[in-house]
Image (cartoon, rainbow, N blue to C red; front, side, top):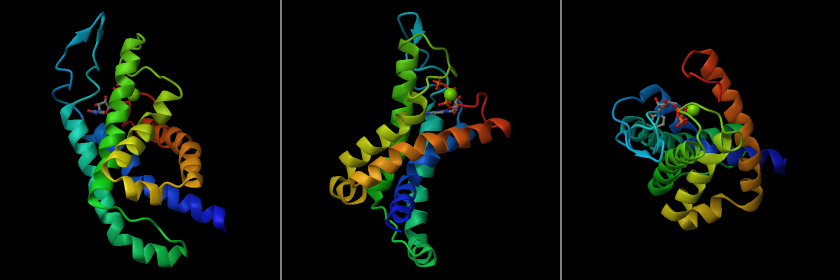
Amino acid sequence: METVGTVVWALWAMLPAYVPNNAAVLAGGGRPIDGGRTWGDSRLLGDGKTWRGTAAGTLAGAALAVALNALSPSVSAAVGYTLPTFPLLAGVGLAFGAMVGDIGASFLKRRSGRERGAAFPGLDQLDFVVGALVCAFVAAPSWFGETFTLPVLVVVLVATPVLHVVTNAIAYFLGLKNEPW
Ligand code: CTP
Ligand code: MG
């Protein structure tokens, strides 16, 4: 089944970008990136974007990429589909990009008058995907081209919002997040 193989490949390729925001939720706190600065009437980014959360998220995603590389031969054999592996720059690019995308979204939320924690449907589900893909493309262009073919990109853009809604709802009900988005 070609389609299943593409979905498995796409989700595996995006795992280092899926983990950072959740790691940031667990590890976040401390000094905000914007240092409390405002632009107009609103914070530049807000207290929800911290140095610690960003560093922890990036590290978690990059570490996951390294772990996935070790797992990929046995998992590939077990599921019967080839899985992508991550050069270090690709893993770091995906993880850091996911954090940057989320920070960019907070910037846009504050500019549009949304308080910390406010929902921005669409942006909330795709900010980190776009950040991760752009950053991975910049950090590891040839790997990006081989890994994210057009069908894979389509799967990523369709499946990620669904996964994001589900995982955030779980985090909310577990009491890890203050809002279910
Ligand atoms: N977090 C962090 N640093 C980041 C991203 C997230 O410390 N770069 C932590 C913060 O404790 C944040 C929590 O993870 O409150 C949830 O993240 P998110 O939903 O992205 O932030 P919000 O608090 O909702 O703020 P915003 O409205 O700016 O998204
Ligand atoms: Mg939020």
